[in-house]
View 1 (cartoon, rainbow, N blue to C red):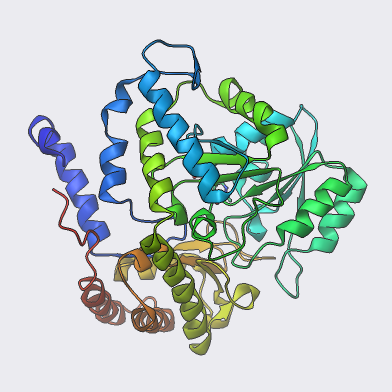
View 2 (tube, rainbow, N blue to C red; view 1 turned 90 degrees about the vertical axis):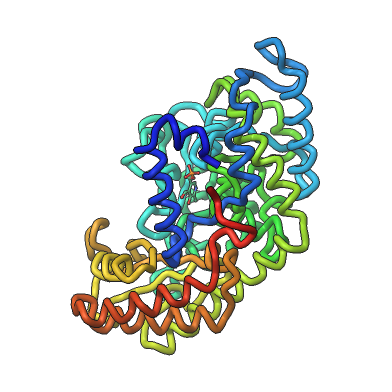
Length: 417
Ligand SMILES: Cc1ncc(COP(=O)(O)O)c(C=O)c1O
C-alpha cells in the first residue's frame, strides 16, 4: 500500500509499519475506535484528494467539479436512504465540525444551549469551558441522576423551562444507555427550541437498525464517520427538510471551506456498506459483546455504571477494585489491551486520574471476537485489576492477551503491505 513511501521516506514507512504491528497485536477497546476497511483506506488516499471544490453540487466555486458533483449527490442519496432522513450533508471534516456546522446554522452569539456535562459523558463541543464555542454561546449543562446514572430528564425539562434554550444537544461520548430522543425533542420543542442529536458514537448501530434512531425526532443529527460507523475520519449531518438550506449554509461557508473529497469518497462507500447484511451482523455482535463484557465484569466484582449497556460502551467504576482509571489503563496497555481512563458521574478524582475507564467492543467485534473471547478478556482484566503493579502478573496476562488476539487478524482478507 505504501510502495512509493517505502522508497522515498523509509523512516516514515517504518513508523507506519510499527503502528500496523501495534494494532495487529493489541486488543483495541477504545470506544471511539474501529478498523477502517481496505476500501476506506484506498479511497481516503484516492485522486479526489487533488481536487479543490467549495459549495454544493451544481453550485460550485471552482471549475472541474462535475465528477465531484456526481460523487457528492450519490453520497447524499445514499445517506438519506440509509437513515431515512429528509436531507444529508457529507462535508464536515469530523464529528466536531459537524456540530459547529449546526451551531453556525441556527445559533446567534449569546444564545442558550443545553448540553450534557462532560464529566457525565457529554463531549467537549457540547459546552465545555475548554472549547472555544463556550465563548460564543451561553451553554448550560444537564447531567445524570445520581441514583440511576441515567440522563436526568426532569432536570433537563426544568432547565429548558427556565432557560428557554435555542438548542438542546442529546448525545455523548461515554453514555452506555439508550437516549429517549422522543422525550428530548418534546422538551426542546415545548421550550421553543430545536433538538440536535449527536450520535457520533452510535451512528453505525443506528445505521444497522440495531438501536433506535434519533432521525424521526431530532431536527438535526450529527455524527463522526469513525467510531461504530467504521469509516474514515470525518463527519456527517442529517436534518429535517425545513432546516436543509440553513444547514448547508452553516456548514459552507459557515464552518468549513473546501471539501475533503477523498474522505467524502470513503464516506460514500461506507454508506453502501452500512446497508449490507454483514455490517448489520457485525453491529449485532458489537451489542452482544458489550452486554457480555458488562455481565462478565460484574461477575468479577466490577461496578458497571448505569447498570449495564445498550450500545458498544461499558463504563466501569473502579472504586470497588481500589484502583484508579489511570493505573488500570496503564497496566492494561502494558498487557496489550487498549482502553481509556474516563471520569465517572460525580467523580471525585481529577480528569487525568479518574475513577473509571471506558471500554468499547467495535474493533474486537470487527475482528470476529464473540462472547467466549469477551469472557476471556474480562478474565484478563480482572487479573490485571487484582495486581496492576506486579510485573510477573502483567507478563502472564500479556502472554494470554497475545495468544487470544493472534487468532483474529486485523485484516483477514490478507496483510496490508
Ligand atoms: C459525542 C461526540 N461528539 C462529537 C465528537 C467529535 O468527533 P470527532 O472526533 O470526529 O471530531 C465525539 C468524539 O469523541 C463524540 O464522542
